[in-house]
Length: 146
Image (cartoon, rainbow, N blue to C red; front, top):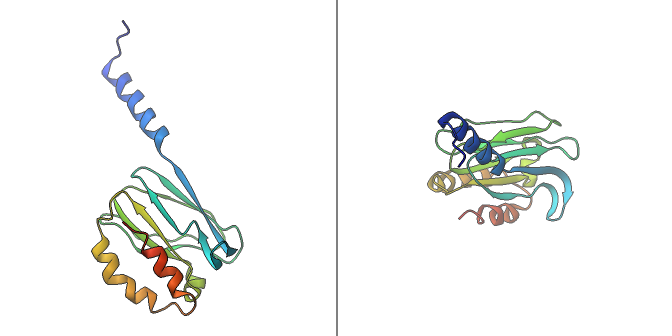
């Protein structure tokens, strides 16, 4: 029978847990499957410990948080640069592309349970009021939160 010391066993568990984490990739596009000025995918349901990498597939884009889960910090990527976000708390991130908010370039990351759904419901109308083109597309993305 093989015996493991506590530090070795703990290390093995941590390595196994980290290898289960997923790196989601979100492309920032001028044109995608759902129209112009989009994040693809526009909604993901991730787990705590996952990461999300925003990829400026086409120039002129960045991503900025509008709503974040409790105990999470607001975040913003630099224009035309990849940005990786570590998902450390359950809840919903609603984010947008500042240059293209008016065109409905909005996305959602749900991490585990939507613990801050009440905050999303109260703050989303203000964000929606700034969208001139395709606000219904954004409503559809927000409706995916469960």
